[in-house]
Length: 54
Image 1: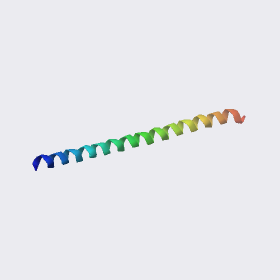
Image 2: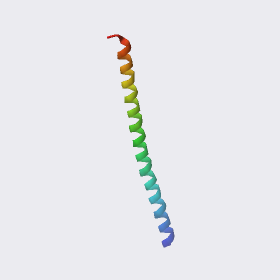
Image 3: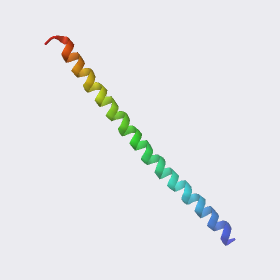
Image 4: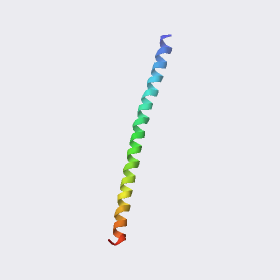
């Protein structure tokens, strides 16, 4: 009885950690995508400024 309880606890803990890791990875991915979009927008903005002739 004790061992089965311990095993379920370990499994639950593992899933908890995996969930935390996936949350962190998700946040990193969102930040990376936003950063990429901002860089792309700035590059496009500069490009349009150069070629608009103002």
